[in-house]
Length: 348
Image (cartoon, rainbow, N blue to C red; front, side, top):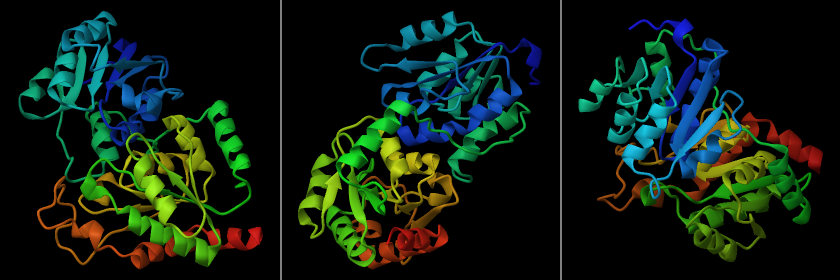
């Protein structure tokens, strides 16, 4: 169906659930704004991912669906009441499909997933197992005939959170130092390199480069961060409890970020921090960090990489058998690629 741009005054983009997935969906927003410069563009997500899109310069309103407070009918009524002309469902689960269908929008865009495809009048062929997640999202715009001029994701930082990070760095005397942040968290156990391995890696980096080691953590992850700190020989600093924006500001000030496949990995890419990303059951070609200043490391001896198993039937060798030396080598490559060795020598 051809879209009459003159009839598009209000647009809703829907992307629910995970922080990383929502952040990768922001790739559509600048392109959408370029195509509809005078339209109201809103975004619907869930509370854990609210901060990902809040403050995005290409959005007008961020709507938050609270699974504990709202039910499906109240969400449908809320969206329908807004009288959108165009709704783009980038999530495609039953709830988001029905919200799109009952929105009353003239144009309803979504993917060809089972019965849900009947909720849309512009149906997108899904390429989730073939292309990076950003291209999966951009395919929705291509289906509408919108040209793609920008492929970046966006995680806006405001002065308030930058001040938070600056005060933390000042308190810990990290200003002007080579700071390597380590993130041992990750949604699935099978995606997580072990705390003991991160501990050994932190000591090796501190020994050989004189780096300061920073340990990031989120809800349910502090125990692992504490374990890393307590088993390291060198000083390691836990970041304070913080929200996503504050975490992004801290990561932005770091020299390098070493992480499992996770939401913070995508935040690091969005704020421009060179990143070593550890992958196993997920595929970096499909879900990897969206930046040129990163290095991917995997246990390439295995044939089962990218299995997407949340439980491993053979003991999770992609994480268990990925050595500290292999991750350190990836770290060295990143340092060289981003000319961080020069920065180290300048810092003395």
